[in-house]
Image 1 (cartoon, rainbow, N blue to C red):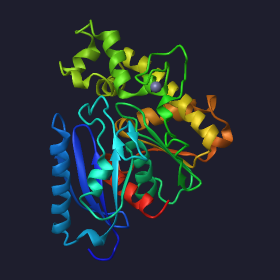
Image 2: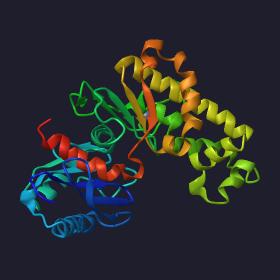
Image 3: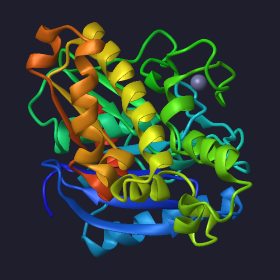
Image 4: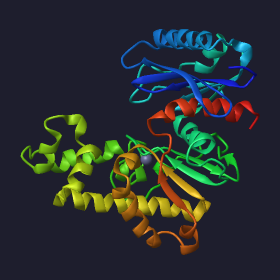
Length: 324
Ligand SMILES: [Zn+2]
């Protein structure tokens, strides 16, 4: 690889961290995954640096061949200070000055953003939203994170907190959300909330057909068995699914009326469910958005799929590195 066009990226997640090198035109040329779960952050961070240096030497490049370094990390973050704070999946990563640490090991400038904004940048620069000017991205996984591209820019907000689309309140009397509010979009449709709802409805009924689908594996209770149950036309699953589709349409319809996007890109759950989710949501949209908003919007699953972490980190480097 030649020219001053490479990017170095770190995608930090609760279980795994991806370290990767990307070319300016959006190709991941080398990557490595590091186990994070339950380990000490100091050890993991040292390994991130040695993995990055190993990848650079395998590509025959040095610091001077790298335009910028990007880090995508779960919140809460102090993006301006470059500091990570503890989250439920990363309890040990509290008050970690990740940007200073990485800056101390490499010469190029280091940029940090949260994983949802980083995902939005990835789908926009290198995935489904290439060439679009107005796009919304939703992570749709354990929780629901969002990133907004408006008029060709990532929307950041005064305190760099914009895009928390999972936490718009759809029903003030709805279920409690992990954020402290009640009835958030995430509290209805996030993976963790859906798992909790199934457990509270069926946890005492081990012989229920839905619980049998999990086969005793608690990690499957949630979207995995729900999607299977809907495909099998189980009554409980179908009624919960109707609810989830309605809440998704309510949220997406709201985003459409506010932002008039060309495209809405949906992550993990939409990838797993496909048209099982998208078709009913699209059918329900006219209840929540104007026809002229719905007419030209494309709603689709993520194009980058399980590679989005790598692309996210590279996209943070590419977007902020070019002086956005
Ligand atoms: Zn919330």
